[in-house]
Image 1 (cartoon, rainbow, N blue to C red):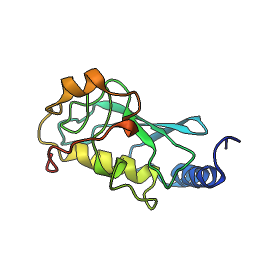
Image 2: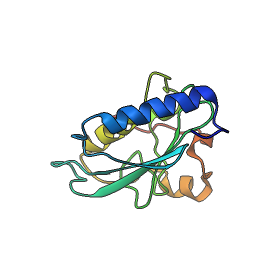
Image 3: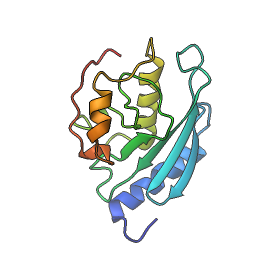
Image 4: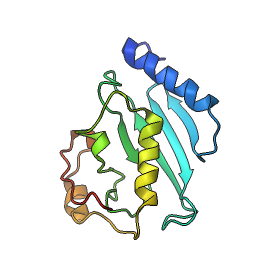
Length: 152
């Protein structure tokens, strides 16, 4: 891993990478390691969902404080039209903010996002999408999200 990356973060990311690569890929996730601190994970919307067959890619950027701090996670364009995903790819999900736990892994984050998408009954953007994206910072971790609805 990168020399600049902290030892704990580097070891944890390497361990997760090895596990991700050795586990069966029945979940349909494709991992591309962009750098020591950036992963891209692609998937296809699950059958029977409003996103069925649609391709998406998430970018995970790990910090020196990982796993004590969550990675930055965004959808690359095009982002899905989902009530918890802004058109700029930022994701409003509690485990990426206040409910983060070092026990979570990159894969568990992705599976939570897949679950969130699979439970959606309709496509649509967050109610404040235009206002948020007009003034959003590049890194969603520098944002204080207002969780509008936990049922979507």
